[in-house]
Length: 118
Image (cartoon, rainbow, N blue to C red; front, side, top):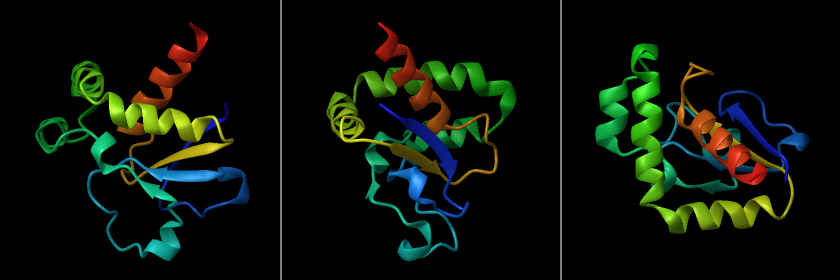
């Protein structure tokens, strides 16, 4: 399993493999061609309520992670679909925010990496 994360606004590369957008909203100013997204898993993204509450405030990061993991626990179908793609080669989770340390792709990557070690 090779899982990466990357801003959707960065230039796509062949090393990205299968690119999955994990945002609920389509990134501003990007066409489907420029985004080079293979799959948009908006139902895997944090709920609108959680996203608005968090507002990418680093002070809310720990609580955001807890709440998002609880949401993911209720969303097993999407996680199963994501795992199916991970079995087929490199997957890059792409996201729109400028904050590279505090976003849903980081939570997903860490959750998957932790689960694969068990």
